[in-house]
Image (tube, rainbow, N blue to C red; front, side, top):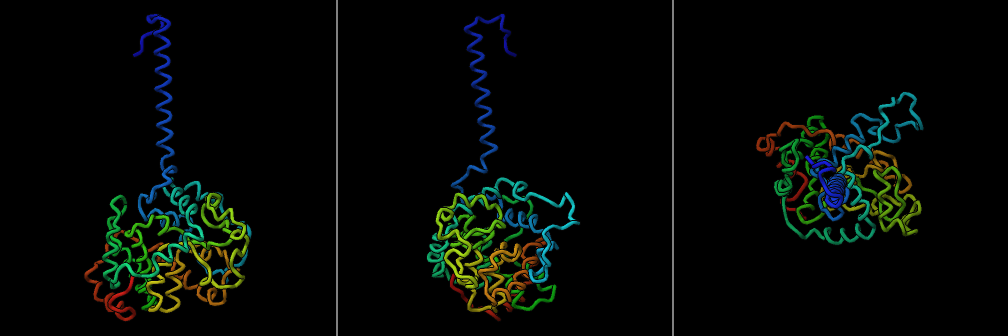
Length: 340
């Protein structure tokens, strides 16, 4: 308990008061730093506490069974849904946890046209390792995230969950295989790539950013935003040029597509290459860049999306029991070793 003022000289009282003010200021500054810390980690390679945080955010933004799961051609345009309840209107950006906001801030800051170009040159020589698909799945297990309190499943088990749900629905064998390998590109994290350059929603670089991309305000800090050539509707592209001619932001989708592009059917390759391109397959954006082939493949990407997001559970697949089936399936489409 502090002594009363009457027991202190005026000089002593001033000294105590000054010390209290200094202490309060220090506490307030520390509290603010602890609140702002997740937003301030500008140099962090891993703002997400768990790689699954990004997919958890997507599941909140795109609930299973929402209208956006229906192919765009089958959806009648409706500017306002009169039956939509007040509680259904959510601000997903405001609700996102700070680590997710920081992840998208870094992603939108750094994913420039030149960055995507440079990463293609760095990784798409595919000269880092030679591995079979099952070997690559075991290698990816090094990404098991001990910070995730919700699951102790390995990356290999997550891939098996996805492919097993596809298999249970009676989908073609190549579809099952696409589910098995779709996240193998995340091994980029094992080679020093930051999270924001491996996962996250992908988007075209070299042209105007759609406002349907999550956290569009963060693009204001991207240097491409200051380049008029990149910020017109078409940017450096021609209308209807096709997505193959568009440089999408860098990540695990493009990497696994390039590794597998000589071995799988076109439908599977579209699933791998564009499963994180949510502005296109869930928001209906960038149609003016697509060609007839892209539009024909869009329903397959949309068909794959629910398996990508909603098939994870806490039950562990029996890896050894499933391995013979998947090794046969892998051998049906892939050589014994692939270049990574």
